[in-house]
Length: 465
Image (cartoon, rainbow, N blue to C red; front, side, top):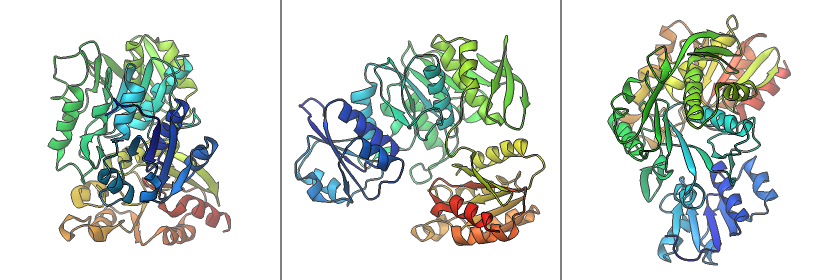
């Protein structure tokens, strides 16, 4: 695919963090770069403008009239897209973003790939900061915006490339998981659960793609896996590469003991060293143990790792406090899987032990719109005092037998004795909270989308009370 001379590259679907960052990096390498997207939102709109990359509005065959040498097709692009159809009609050279990253940025580097159903962004961000703080200047690619960096991706001349390895499929023409492309020297597997019900039939299918990923670790590499996760045990039983486990209290290569949770931080010990982490919750301790295992394997000391932990500032949209208005604290979180919601609320309960916690949830992901987690979703709100659920997104696109049953969900939540409401949209939820939330309460909004700007709307409405 890349044998012929490439001078010009067009990105179809350039607005995403990873696509825009890769486009800018290709420009820095000397390629002529253009892009197109239906909508490009901040911060990537300003990022691309600063790089002076032409971004064409919408998708149109005319955007490819110059016949670029390579077209990078985003994961969200499907058959029927005018540019994608033009590429096929005219036999233009095309590839996925994952393939582009592998060829132009990861090949020849020491690749650390962080995978798992939960905690990928936090773990990858923390690991990248440990390397950065200690002068290793890593390349990195994240699924979020870490507060220690100005952007979610960076490409350097360092030998290290730290990347979030997503198990979601690569493109319309490549149904392998993205992480299959990333040449892991070190593979971290945080945990494994059923997710992405639109592309995986069941848990066995998820295990299968992770097993394919694990097969890629070389004999001089390292597989770091969560020893506490029952779904991972059989996958970690391999002999083709070194395997180390991390977890809480077990006989692992990286074991954490004596956890002490504070309202904004956590302490834990490994043999011969005590760590302090500016994050809360048991899940984040496991994330940190994975980082410790990888960093020590790469030659960093406990003191160097702790020095980075001391200055880690977290990630946007992971328990991010958006503001305080009318005495109510409003928090944004990306959680969209029952386990992520459960663990996030558990961590919030440590921080806000006596306050009333409202959980607002938008069933938007391709998994939570379906009934596969009908019972688990209701149980996920155990540590909330009140629950508000918005109308299930795009429910009409699913067959009735596949859909999440909102009425049953609300009945199950109310059966646990919690206040609850099922409301049509962000505006209705803001009105409800403005009427019922009191000073001192905490509202956490769970969504993997923009949720119609609910955070700003809620803060503005509460501020006018």
